[in-house]
Image: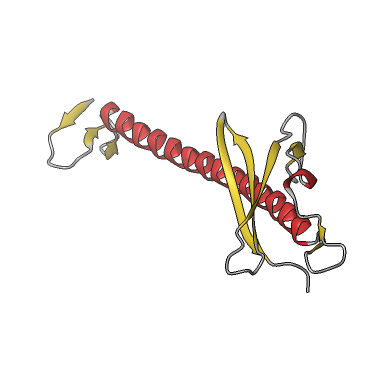
Length: 160
């Protein structure tokens, strides 16, 4: 075989006996194109992995927010009427202890059980003779060895 020189990117090979000119890729071109293909595929796979991880974190965060909101709703549903005889005040921190065995409300398969802890803080913020309390719930949860906290806070006036 003879190689004819050319200005094209491909080496042109002249087959003896056939009289036809054929184009072929060099080994360097094949290696470079394979490298580019592998890097592109690795980037796509990493993109999917990161998107999946972010979606999983979002699911954990939403479940923790739901737990914190449930506790807020429990505190808002308690009886608190300082004008009644006798006055009723069930909206105290001792009625809402720390719950550390909550399982986040997510699909479970195998060992991906996720736990969270709810901390409730009830503070009297009465001013101007009008009774009012601030309710704050912190839901602490972990994801991939990092700890996160979802916080919900609201104000509550007594029952009317």
